[in-house]
Length: 82
Image (cartoon, rainbow, N blue to C red; front, side, top):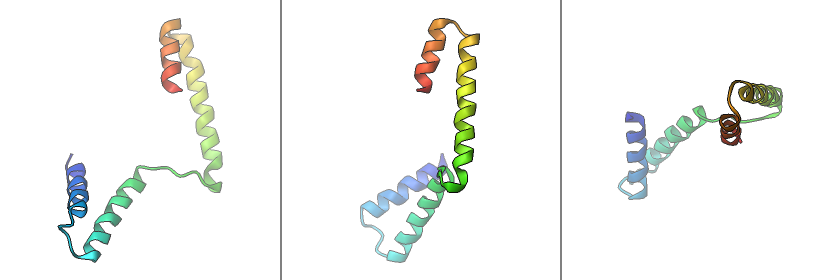
């Protein structure tokens, strides 16, 4: 993936001290941080309800899985879901 290659290259350059311009280093890590934030989810006071609903939905899905699978498959799925 091109994004991963660019990210890894930027990190490598920064670690090897090839980049001497502090503004450029800040810009690079700002881009990396923004990329990570798009892939993350933060639970705050405003999103507690969403998190509770998500956990309830996952619990319902988990409870239905054992109905459609054999005992061994159901246990494997439960172990996989944690």
